[in-house]
Length: 274
Ligand SMILES: NC(=O)c1ccc[n+]([C@@H]2O[C@H](COP(=O)([O-])OP(=O)(O)OC[C@H]3O[C@@H](n4cnc5c(N)ncnc54)[C@H](OP(=O)(O)O)[C@@H]3O)[C@@H](O)[C@H]2O)c1
Image (tube, rainbow, N blue to C red; front, side, top):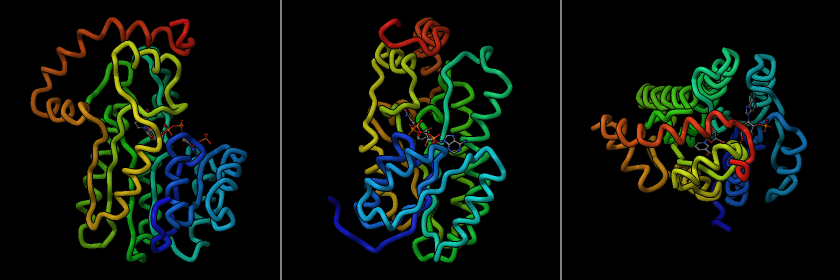
């Protein structure tokens, strides 16, 4: 267990998911008070009961795509004595070729992964600015920096989230709120369907446990200024190469394209069948 420290109140979106769960456990162990957001109230309650000092934490079940759900969340945050940290972690993905994505799927991915963090951050900034520990952590993805076939909408949403975070960090430079960005590579959670896991095995892509990412997230809260952090080697190197010499990455990914197309077309079949 990590050492106890000054307690912060943290709103964590997507707490019912794989990464959210690990972040919640670690921050609760370190003495933070958590507002656990997600859609699945049973999972959230189960998580809350399993945390250190369960009675200190609150569950806020709301669909963030619904304006009523977001209003309810805001209301609950304003009822708190204060809010120190917002972790925009809720997210969705869909592994498919662009032509197979319906309008609704495109909109939901951009809305959940980009517009929701933007509106939540805007609405909660006045509360965060009142805290000497005020911070925002946006959970991005390596795919926001290496546009990946089969993940066009997801890559676009996370690239947008990175640009939003960078602009906001600079906009908040004189406000005391630290604005962080954390980009994991693949993480072992339910976000990745059997088809994605089979693709990762076929391409020998490495993945991390949620606990590894949670430790990086918790560490950001000790940083005195906003940070951008990318997890995993060699992914960090690929991100730099892609920024400087994108044609090298074009060429590497075009060799993998037949495999990516095959798995994307097979959609949600089980990894064993694939
Ligand atoms: N897993 C990876 O490989 C990976 C890699 C890089 C980055 N990331 C990022 O890490 C973050 C967490 O992902 P994860 O892997 O933990 O995925 P996950 O296990 O599928 O969890 C996603 C979470 O987001 C919540 N959520 C989704 N849509 C929502 C909505 N409309 N309203 C409210 N909550 C909503 C889910 O709530 P319910 O379950 O209650 O519906 C769940 O708590 C995401 O931003 C993801 O893009 C993941």
